[in-house]
Image (cartoon, rainbow, N blue to C red; front, side, top):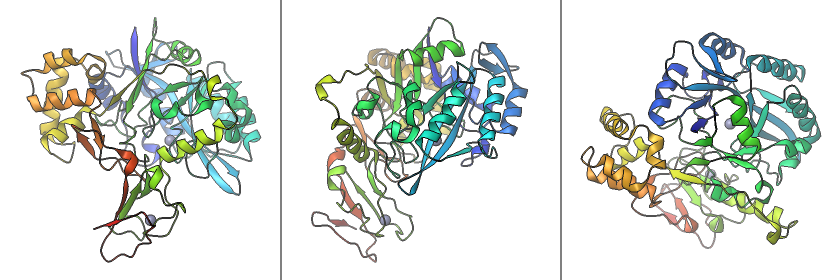
Length: 447
Ligand SMILES: [Zn+2]
Ligand SMILES: [Zn+2]
């Protein structure tokens, strides 16, 4: 059977947006077609206690809400932040851990506390001295239980192992030898298999996708997910698929929409007012300095991945590369497509919600929108919703969409349906007329 999993989330204890309720999450999972969801923050004492109160184990390592009559399941998961001083600066890397049982969570918590981890925030910090120290500490955790799985999280964002903050050019440089035991990495919102296929070190590693949601909203839960084909759902069967590289496919948020796709500085940043700048890799100023505020630009994923490729390919014969086949679909959250079609800026309108529910009633759940054929979707939705909306959904399924501008420096990309946007030539300095800018030879200022 095919199951859809979204195995990275956060509770209200991880800071950021609001609080999460697994009861609400369960309702959203039903609409989105997610079968198994990561609990988030399961090391945090209060969230851990809450999880123990509301969850009951149904299959090995899979839990449901106590009074639930649905087949929706939860899997124990956390993200930790590992920090190491590299080249005289701190490197921060988010890392996922999956657990087969509450007993195992308790064992790992004790072990991490013995390393000095302060378990006071949802996403706790583990301070390490260097990559050998990271490796030793993670090895000890992995050795606590055969079924614990460690997965580097959203690897291309600034807080991912290949992120642009204090960059490293191989997993080993940060994680040390324990990286040989990693069987998967998480793509994150700003990258997809097309981008990660560039990195030779990942050629034989599974790619998994998760939403990293902090809320139960329809455009957050399951905005990325991973499908597995398993005989019977259980924690072991999912972990075995990851270890044996049996990922059926991933559903990917388009990287161009992700918050760190291109290089730039967003409006509203210190000394920026409403001015911003955004560059594709070939147009980034060679100094990597922002022409508006004169500080270092936030380097985007596209630029970063090219740099990693250049560094890794030096030691490899490109003809020797054999790569796992990675099936995926590129998606846009359905409520964003509806909002775009109606010309409404916020996705929280009751009108959008009512159209969303009409569509789901007709097709079953949102995952079917991406996995079923175009003709099937067209046939089912005909007469149920407006033809323009159906045409926009089909165009997204066809890949005929883009973002103008794409995401950069912490801002999401702005959706455009009906054409592709050439992101290779972006060279924009949008400037408040009162602001002075340092312009490189080839760059133009826009007002
Ligand atoms: Zn993270
Ligand atoms: Zn700036």
